[in-house]
Structure formats: C-alpha cells, structure tokens
Image (cartoon, rainbow, N blue to C red; front, side, top):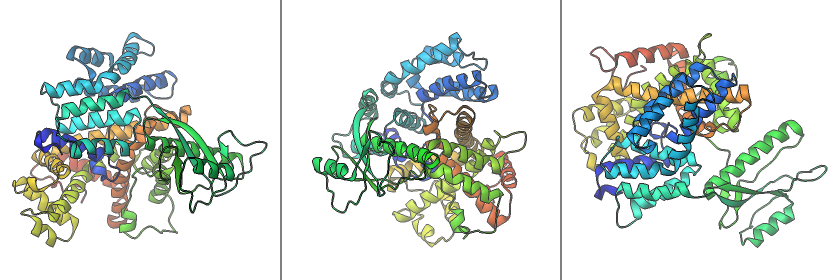
Length: 522
C-alpha cells in the first residue's frame, strides 16, 4: 500500500478498502452518507414536513447533524461558503424560502468539485483525520451509484499494485474522474427456469427460451449446462457492471412483487445472469445486507416452535431487512427495532436505545478482530492470545496490551493498524469514544426511521437516501439485535433492561467505578 508515502495515506487507504469490502465486520464498515447526498436528504425531508409526513423535530435533528458535517468538510468549499451553508441549515428552515433554495443550489454545486477540494486540502496539509477523510470520500463515491465491488478493485489496484506509488492527494484527483463519468448502458439477461404465460402478450423485455439461447450464442457466451425456459433482457444504465447487475435484480424484485399480488404465478430465476460484453456468467443471489444475529445459532435457538411475540416476532420482521425489496426492508427493519425498544410515547427513541447497544458492543467487536490478527503474526502477545479460550479473555489481553503500549504495530497489515489506532484513541478516553460511536449509530438509525415514514406514510419507495440508509444501518441493526437476543436467552433480560444497562455503562465508562470496555453489557 502507500506505506512509502506516509502513515496518514496508508491509514486512509486501508479504511477505504474496509468500507468497500462486503466481507468487512460490522464494526469496520461505513455507517454514514456523504455530504452531497445528505444535503439532498434535507431538501426531501423539508418537502416531507411541508406535506405533513415528517415532524419538525425529525427535520431539526437532521439539520443539526448536517450543520456539524458542513463545518468540518473541506469538500464543501472555502470557509466562507461553509459558514453560509451552515447558517442556511437552521432549525426554522422554511419550505420554498431563500435558505431552502440556497441548500438546493449548494448540493448541486458541491458535487462536481468535492474530491478535487479534498485533494487540494491534503496538499495544503489540512487533514480532518484519517477516519473522517476516508468516511467522507468513500460515502461520496458510493452515493454516486458505484458498486462497492468496483470501487474496491479500483482502489486496491492504485494502493497495492500501481507503480510508482503516489500520494493520496493524487489518487483523490484520479477518483474525481469517477465523479465525472456518465452512466453506461448495459444489456443484462436474466433467465428463468419456469415458463411464463403472458396473456394477452408478453412485455417487450421478455425473451423466449429460443431467443435466450440465441442471444447467448450471438454474444459468444458459454451456454453449456444452461437449462432455461425464457427470460428477461433488460437495458439498464449504471456506472459499472456490478451496479448494472444489481439494478437488474432490483427490477426483478419489483416485478416479483407485482406478480405476487396480481397473478397466481411466480418467477423462478437461475443462479446466474449474463451481461453483454462480459465473458462469463455473473452469479447472483438475493441481496443480503449484512444483518447477522449470530446469537440465534450460538445459543442453539434457530428452531423455536412454541414461542411467539417479542424477540420471535422481531426476528421475523428483521428478516425483511436482510433480503427484501427496499420498501419492505425499511418497513420491516424499523418495525423490529420498534417492537423491541420503543416506548408508547417515544417511538423514535428506539434509535437512541439501539445506538447505545451498538456503542457498547463496538469495543469487543474491534478487539476480537484485532486479537485474531495479532495471534496470527509474530507479535509479543501472540503466544498469550493463542492460549486464551473465550473471546472476552482475548479482548482483555489486547486491551491491556494497548494500554501498556505493548503492541508491535509494524507486524500488522494496514487495516489492522488502523483498527489499533482507533482502539488506542478509544481507550485513552473511553467515555468520549463510546459517545462518538453511539452518535454515529444513532444518526444511521434515525435516518432509517425517517425513510420508514416516507415509505409507509408517503408511499416513497424511491427516496434519495433509501438505498444508502439500508446500506449503512442494516449491519448495525443486526449487531444491536444480536446483543438483545443473547441477553434474552443467556441472561433472561428484556430489551429495555439491556438498554438500561447500556445507558449506565455509557455514562460511567472510563470512571473509577465504571465498567471496562470489554464488559459494558455484562
């Protein structure tokens, strides 16, 4: 990676790859939207408040968060422009007013210059910090519509394989070219295994089995072993091939929903799709958004026939967040959160309660991942870690070694060194660090709640931040509810009892009598 340049560049590069890697653990993933998309969210939310769909309190919460982001983001422009935009994001923002128009114009004006401004800021040695730098840039690129797989390949080549190694400011200049690219047109063939009768006539995108085979052969694609009964040939626009495949699958999901309520037929897809110009088939499966409640398997509770309500109903609702279409995912996901953590007169407060659980889970998640990295390389604490049994013991060993400065950081790869830096900062001021994590998680959950309201009360299944909201919040929801399920089966605690424990831990962590960062929910 860019070790030859400086540690700041290396840290940022490692985090960019973390954010674009679908295999990253939840604690290393991206939780936020980019500035430009968030400004567009403000415009949409203001419209929703005007229509009576969102409350003024919901809008004010969003505005407060965006004001802070604008003030520290060099991509938003020179200090004078940032201050003016901050003033426009005031609590009494009026629909159709002057400040509303200023926000609309600035959202459009910032986008084409965002990464060049970041590159210039780095050249002038203005650095908000490697974590914030990586989060701002990664979210901006994902918000444009690029797939995470494409961006991971793009950055990995430049960080690991390109010669000569270049400073991060130059790579940001290169990435600016991605922001200027126009969407391309892709032909995506989605075959079915079941024949569909289309009365009175099939849609224009339908192809018979013979036409599907002919299309595959004409594009010199391998058809060996392909057993199909027709399919759809979609023309989609996207910024990269992986994004085009995802868009085709979204269309299929929408069509499946219409057929489910409009006919007695259903679509049975092959495991692969083909894209014109791409040599091989692309394996596809229903999108999984990273919602993992591993306590169900760990505590042998995957099968529980006799139970109903509470935890069990929430898990059923949560499944929609994992793999359903966007509208159903946001509705089901928030319903699961609300069922577990809301109070009669405070539904939105469930976001803060779940955020507290995520914050209390964060140190253990980071320490666990780092412990395995340290055990696998030649570090001074590797023998001790290899003898350790439970994860909690491993985490305590690593936390103690970090506090005593006994970690051999050069032995770690850049991603784990970045994790070590985060943990070192957190352990230096545990209370402040946990509050920051809780705030980030709360913003993601509040956004999910707003999108749920737009879907259920406004019928907006194409909200400007709907996809980004699901991308950011889903893994965090899974992490928080995993803790709830564990507490339910192991300690017989209700969700609100666990949330109360988390609230006390966040208030007292780092004090003389407070819990250690490895026992915040014990």
